[in-house]
Image (spheres, rainbow, N blue to C red):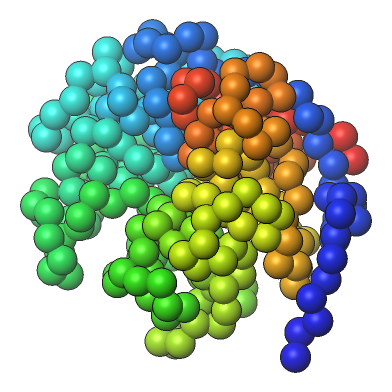
Length: 301
C-alpha cells in the first residue's frame, strides 16, 4: 500500500524545485498572425537537444518554432494563418512533437489526421488518420494530442466515461517509457489517469477527482496538457482554474507553481493555459491560450 505524501511547497518535493511567480513573454506580441504573434496557442513542445520551442498556433493553423537566439519561423502550415485540407495546410493544429532533426509531428485537429513535416518542407505527409471523422482504427475524432516514444510509435486511447478504466476527453499525454506507464489527462472527467501499457486495467487515478471539478488542491477543472520531470513530479495545465499544478510522487494534493487561480493577463496570471513544457534547465513554459502568448517561468532553485 502506497502512503499518501503531503507537500506544501514545490521545494519540498523531489528535486527541491522552485520557479519565479512572474512569467516572461517569449512569443506573443499581441493577438495576430505576424511571425511573433499568436492566436489561441495550444500544444507546445521543447526538443531538449536543440532547445527549440514549437507552438501549435491553433487559430492561425500553423506551427511556429522559436530558436534559442529568439528567431521565430513558421515550421508547418501557412505563415499568414490560412487554413485548409491540402498537404501544405493545417486546420486548427492542437499539438506538436519534434525530433532533434527538426522534423515535426502534428495533431491536425480540424483535418482529423496526424501530419509529418520534415525540416524546411513545404508540404506535410499524413501518417495517421484518413481525413474523415470516425471511430475506426484508421480514423480520428478531432485529435487533440500527439506523443511518440523513442521508436516514433504514436500513443493514444479510446473510450469515454468516469470509471478509472475509461477515458473522457483525453487532451494530454505523457509517456514514461522507462517504466512503460502512460499518463492521460481526461479533460471531461477532471482527472489524470495512470496506465501501465499492455494492461486493460488502470493503475490509479493519479490526480484530480473523476466527475468532481473544483479549485481545491486535490481537484482539477478541465485539465489539458501534462508533463513529468526526471524526479517523478507530474505537472498539469489546470486549464479552467487558470493555474499550473505540480503533483509530487504519491501526493493527491497539487501545488500551484504558476498562475493565481484567477483569470488575468498580468505577468503572474494566466488565461486558460493549454499546455506546459520544460527546457533542459527545467525552466517552465506555458501556453497561455486566451492571452495568445507563451510564458516562461524561470527556475530559481
